[in-house]
Image 1 (cartoon, rainbow over the protein chains, first blue to last red):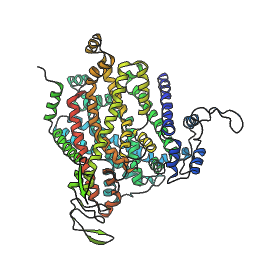
Image 2 (image 1 turned 120 degrees about the vertical axis):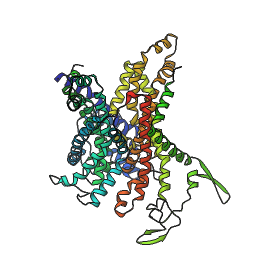
Image 3 (image 1 turned 180 degrees about the vertical axis):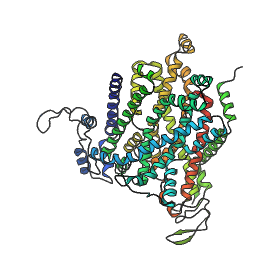
Image 4 (image 1 turned 30 degrees about the vertical axis):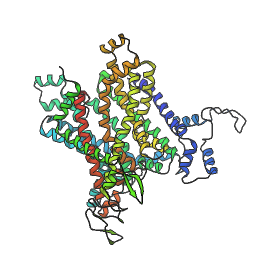
Length: 327
Length: 311
């Protein structure tokens, strides 16, 4: 087990480095420092302004190897854009935001709390609602109930998330006035502000999730062990809830990880609409102010989370299904 | 004589009434998009211009001063009523533009967003997926590494990062979406190629002296093409929806491009004032097209490759 985990972690190292390299290529090679400086500085910057910006951000340095002597008349071969970029990301020495003039690391620490207060409850609640519903639909497979439910799922999936948020916010917040529709409060008071976004997050993911889990269940229902259990005279409920659910855990776990990026998008829009000061809002501000250091760091941090998530899934596979470990 | 695969697929789809309904809606929308492509001559003071499309010509609605309700005779601006120049089936927006016209303008954009990234992604994916699956070895390792890296960056962030270094525009949006999307398809094609390349007919073709290129494009590609077609129809809806989302966060096409996202994004300020037609117009169009594509794509997938059913 320990061997498996270590090997899996080591396998992730090249991927992490690849993500670093990709962001470097994107922000240094694909887009010239000059273009980035101009985007950041806004309307019609002077040549001098652009130049100072480029120097201040170390973007005038050579790309890979610095062969000129520094101020102390010594060689600093690794004082180049590439190595500085890699050092920043790999050692978590994140750069400073261009717009807020704060270290991105500190910003992240400040913003991650409010984001998690939405994503985690939304995530748990959606699993709690979707899984039993999917089992219920799978139980009535082939009937009109099943077909109608599937059609409703497709309809739910065809509504863009913006509509869920705008209409939901309007109906639940403005018309009924049960919950505040904008703002945030740190600590326990947060639940009032978090309630609506969580409900909307669950609602917007319901159609797709339900359909996916139903398919997963149905794939298992066709398996041989189900036929055997039926032949033994095990009741259909027991087959579904004990045998099928247990065997469906692998696709369910996969879906869990696959939905992590969706949680980010979902929470991005929800945070903007409901004024929650989390990572999504931070991302929006960074986009609007062309704050490249923040975007670069967010790409890296989210990729790390994603890679960590997929490692966790792989490890949990071995817990759910002992056969996986012996691969 | 045995029935061809295509015939079987067509017969299966014909039986699915929902899919046929979806296909009809898609055709209707495609017609609107085509009307918005065909240029029409306008004569003005002896000069002939070709800067209007057939859709513009069919839709000669006057621009009003500000909001007006569907089919109203008068609009309201700063609590003062003003006479409208014409009737508007879906009312007008804050700039006085006809909402129905804007919504129809969004159709062409939706088709571009829905198709171009798929085509780009398919080109990438076919080439790299075939290479990886067919040659194996270090080529496979390199290609797999590239898509391993790209797929570990959450797609929304990948999109944001790429759109931030590019200029704003519809085509840039398509390129960014295409780069984000090729990974999944390449993985599928690689897997299928691995299966296909060991089959006897490939062996036979090789024994007859067929070159690698001929083997790949004449014998392997046709057998993985159904994956491409399925993926392209399945992805259409997702792209159309992500256009709306990306427009909302300020990374959409340049202003002036017809866009449902742009129409929807002002709605959170309009709804509390009772202005519902702008949101409804755009949403209904978007919903119908996406629903039609979802229904059709599901049927197509089941018809072409029942094993791919995944939810």
